[in-house]
Image 1 (cartoon, helix red, strand yellow):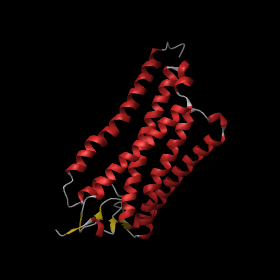
Image 2: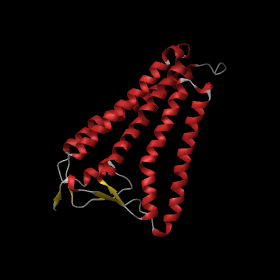
Image 3: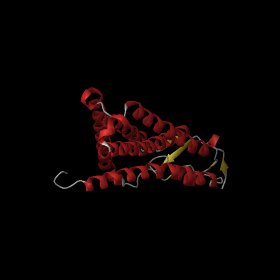
Image 4: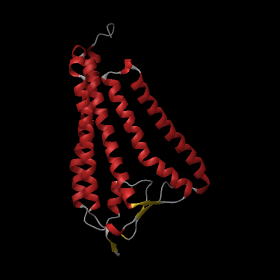
Length: 233
């Protein structure tokens, strides 16, 4: 198969979801409704937390960032998918595809990290209530959120930089509704062993660490609640 250098690959074709033409309108309305509900619901959460001084505490501070991350994650993928469904214009520029991939990884990773931080917040509130205000002070919350943003941006940048070094085949068709890393690696015409190694090691670590934190926090919360006598509980 003839190879083309990545610099000459001007665009990709997103095949989208396997939906019959006569059902396009129904699914378009369904996905549009889900997207608007997600965006408006999370935007309302952010605005309420910002406007109501009673909600200015660590839990709602973290929740506002999670809501913003959910809005961003949805907006990275869904608008382009809806536009493709409506116009049948399936192409996406090379730069646009790489940008979509980068921000999808950033906000997907950020969701996991924020959920882990929120689980720790609930652990301190329930298992160490007398020390909650001392432990979960504003400086720590800001540092945890800033650290989550930093590590997720570095995580996404690493995978993106490794991807753009790869040449792609003449076939630029992506059998997906967005630019997913694993799909892009499959249509590359080069050795992807380094990319796969980074995915399984560094990527695995970025998945396991938040998951372990979430599970550990809620296991401790569960054991603490079960120790409380039923009458007192």
